[in-house]
Image (cartoon, rainbow, N blue to C red; front, side, top):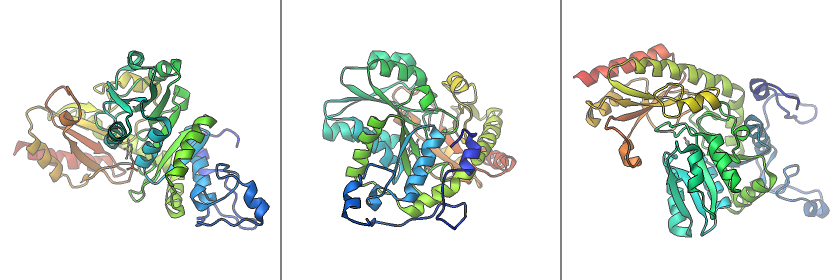
Length: 389
Ligand SMILES: *Cc1c(COP(=O)(O)O)cnc(C)c1O
């Protein structure tokens, strides 16, 4: 495919419909059994080769098309689909770590990733260490001879610190260590992970790529062939097939991915900017705002920000008060995840998640959806009034 802007490539793509039938959507191919014309054809095929088909678990035209498109969005070469973002995270851990190996994980990592790593430590003898997400080049001092993997997440999806990915990659690569990035927040659009040095990109497609709050899926994307093969082997051994209907839901969301992401970004900044002006709010943890740790790195390395950010309430408000604020919201609903059209809001007991978290203000995370931001602001304004009561 010749070079196009991301937005054009999301709409125009290489899918070829069956001969004599013209239409834009990718067909939904259901198959466990794939048929071979003869034994020689069966023997000649290899499950790892994505130019042919062997068995439904190893891929169909629907899954291969989605994989190719996701790899193109990330500017990667290989993509593997998993039934959830968390399954994609698990694949990376299992492909790169053996007992006795060491893995470094930022202290603000998506919590189920932390729990998976802790289980690897407890059950399989992997050494797991947590580092300050703002460590930057200082990661070099933490690297050991048995360190095999450094996880990153940009930004952490609750406390929102933006890490210096190029500095971390440079230090890790100097010792032959691979760097994985949970790039879900930027959707593969606002941060060019491979260009900044990352080896393995993980995406929760559940979020922006789906956009419908109706499907769970994950992806692991790489450029390096040997690395891809190691992850692909784990993918096969664990039997991580994804259904064609679910793939279709994600494929259907892709042409509007960037438009939706940009609209989340515009709405998110409008709501965050308004919150910043409020006396109830001590700080706005949105990477595009100077309060956010790592804001300068975001300005240097990122091109956008989507709709997810957190705020810290002023210390004078108790948890009971901020809970009442959240319960009073009408347009923002209470629930995990993000990337769908509906705005969401969740409180986190951040001081229980992070050692030495500064301050006592309540942390509340907003996922700003695709409603009119003026209505969202009015909703927050009426809910803030409950703080005075
Ligand atoms: C949601 C999420 C995941 C996991 O995705 P699921 O599909 O819900 O398993 C991983 N990382 C981040 C940052 C996420 O927000």
